[in-house]
Length: 257
Image (cartoon, rainbow, N blue to C red; front, side, top):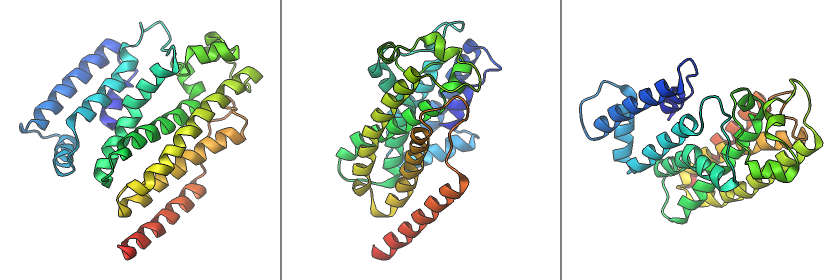
């Protein structure tokens, strides 16, 4: 997943060169997945994981389709945008929900409802990333927030793409970001419902991920959605505290097993 993302985001190369490299990389992976000899350590590890944890190979294809969307979405001189939330949801599914679906195969689950909840957890994570990275994405000629949402809030595409550096968001922009945060909060409820459906010993790992991502969203909300003058992040001390709590939960889960 990291390899695919890095290939797609290597802006030293043109979009066409990146597409060709991704196509070549994907062809090599498919040969390795089919059992052909490979010296790529990542391919060997992933092939072993897909076999042991019964991870559908279609999920990995979907992930590559997601990172490729940015390369195929528009001409290189036009901004990458999404017209509606449904379009954005599909993108988020490919680049984030798929990761969650792969993870729950490793974590272990028995109730099929976990799959939909894992999908929506991925949406929550990706919407959080999108809010945090509004300024950074604009510098790369990308606006992931749906155009129809911009129109509803009276925000123009040009305003987001060319927002003055180190200038706080306008009132309309804050309302736009707040509406995205509310959507993310809805999907974080799915994350909380997912936890008890995961194998007991794996729950602490998922709890750590959900807690850190949700803490990031809360920091954006507390900053009144100012994602322009500083990039939101969860302090290291808070992350370590969450991790320590997760380790305690894991120890308890093993004792209780």
